[in-house]
Image 1 (cartoon, rainbow, N blue to C red):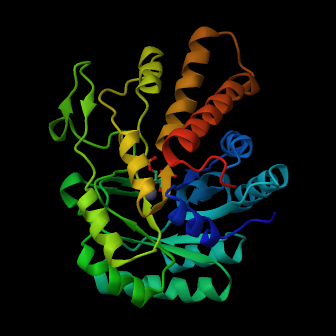
Image 2 (image 1 turned 90 degrees about the horizontal axis):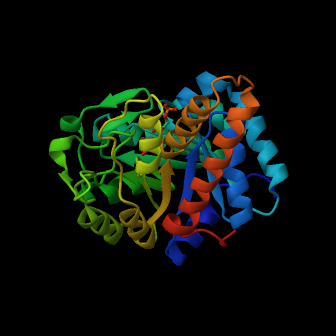
Length: 322
Ligand code: G3H
Ligand code: 13P
Ligand code: ZN
């Protein structure tokens, strides 16, 4: 089937109590690892491209890689989404350039300005058959090129969501309930430590999610910053010359619970980066004489695939839903 929008995916996910995985893509091996897992697990998927990815790999290369995945995986629905669109022009370029979904992220702007920019993107997108994700509230961590310090982060205010959605006409809404971008989601003082000395982050604000869902019945909610920072990969990186002390993510059981509620899209990028980096570091340590990129990218791609499979089956609940 051709590239799809997220409309049908989200409706089924909402009704079925699961979420669609939205994975960031930057090169061929990442696209292949993700989509091979989705094809084998019969899972719908959102492949998303950030401003940084477009700058790194070039818009056309990324669109063509995703189109290749569509050809290779004809049985599963695939959406191509702009992640954290910073302005109308970037959204327009993606709408005109083959994307089926865009995010306009004006969440750092005042409420009225966020509405105004989002509304403009929605009008253009809907005229072209493309859907729009918007954001209310600010996540800590790194959002695309913007670094948001923990003290500048703010939870979504549920009392604002009805007005925002009705005035903008957006198709899905990203909210801030305590997730955060990157591999260092929380400082050590925000966490406790478990018996193994591993940091345990503060729980997500399910009360905020439930209040938002009550006010927007049937409306798809999105969670950004939802990597779980697998400690096996952090260990693999640290044991092979890396230095990532106290990297910590969102516990997977909390994401599973969010997926059972109104969360229909869960964004995961950092976990895939950790899998790729850990695998390549370990490969070089074991094989200092090797220099063929295919030899180290092959196990990296295989580990991305297995990690995505685990997310589809054990976290998102979307395996078998294509
Ligand atoms: O939320 C940001 C995504 O992880 C994309 O990151 O801007 O480094 O491509 P990037
Ligand atoms: P992570 O950094 O937690 O993987 O979040 C990715 C994301 O939200 C992309 O928009
Ligand atoms: Zn994000």
